[in-house]
Structures are given as C-alpha cells and as structure tokens.
Image 1: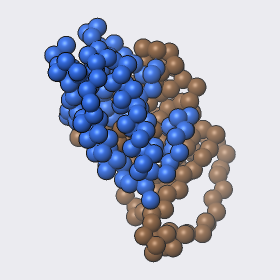
Image 2: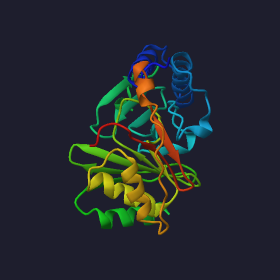
Image 3: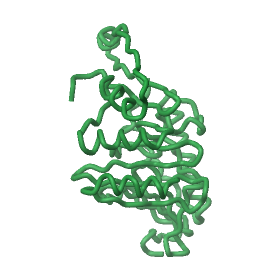
Length: 118
Length: 145
C-alpha cells in the first residue's frame, strides 16, 4: 500500500533536514535526490521511471534543466510544480511554496550559513 | 511556443494575475502561474512533451501535472473551464464539451460498467484516466460539482 503524498512529503523534509550537512551545490542536490528516491522507494510501489514523471504520481527531484539563475552567483534555483528550491554553494537548501511563499525547509550548509546568508 | 501561448492566455483571461517563470535552458520546463483569488493554477510547458495543468495542491514535491495536453487549443479550452466555469474536475460531459471546441466530429459515448461500488466496498478509490492523442486527463466519477 502506498503512503499518502502528504505523509511521504513530511518524511522527505524530515530526513533532508536531519541529514548531515554538506558543503557544495552538487552535494546538496545529490542529497535531495537520494533522500527523495529513498522515501519514494520505501513508501510507494511506483517504480522509478523519470520518463513517466508527468503521469506516474511519483515524486521526483528537480530536473537538472530546470535550473535558474537568481542574480546571486552563490545561489541557484530549481522550479517544480509547487515549489522553488534554492541551493547555496555552501550546501544550504531552502524550499518555498510558489503559491503562498511558505518556507517548508531551510537547512544551513556545513558552514552553518543559510541560503539568505549568502 | 511558450511565449505565444502565454500571450494568448493573458489576452483571453484578463481578470487574473500571472507570473511567468521561463526556462533558462531550452529543454527545461517553463511555468505560467495563474492566480485566481485564493487559488493558483499552474501551467507547465516542456518542449516535445506539451502542456501540463497543476491545480494548486502543494502536498507533494516534484510530482507531474494533474492533466497533460499536447494541443494548445485544447488546453486553453480547459483553462477556460477551470478559471471561468470553475469546473475543476473533468466529468464525461466536460470532456465532451472540451473536445467539442476543437473537434467537429461527434464523439460516440457508450455506457460503461461502473466498478466503483466494488472498489469502494473494499476500501479503495477508483481513478479513471483518459488517454488521447491530444491529452491525458483524469475523469471524475464523484458527485457533480
């Protein structure tokens, strides 16, 4: 039985927030991708099939070509359905809803600085 | 393609607020957020795959769209149904109306067996998704909205 998306999302944010901090853009993107895939593999039976992302109901990490500049060379942004994900070059990550601008996750990098500190 | 689509949508739906988030990499998704009161309807455009409609839920991360369209006229007709007629869910009637705007041929409908009672009696919920050359859309079988 698949867990609800709401529950899977809570687990994803919890595991990502509590994971050991990292120190680069690439490492935090890998961390996000790894934890999201781990949660989806653990709590759904929907197979990992990125080519079916538009229709299969599984949650996927942002696609690499959804990257956007932010005007701050230390921060990049990825856009997906309902969220903007900001990633700092110190390994920080901040996830905000598009609709209400609610901050769902604000995890500092290894140096203790958050995205807004960069 | 995306720029033309945005212009058409903005010209047709004058009373809504729009935010455009265009891809910086050619293969990437571009997004059009349409703010309608307390709701946001998001259209995703991805080259070679077409348009997706996201209906404002934020209880997921990185999910695909609720409805997929590969025909620009069809998605504009669908946006009109959502934004103006407030028909968030698609029932068979809406599906017929939607195709009626872009197809001149009549579509034959047949009464299908209703397995929902069986599914509900076993604690499940039934989801029906219609696949066409032009779109993939879920069909609601609940009470009329």
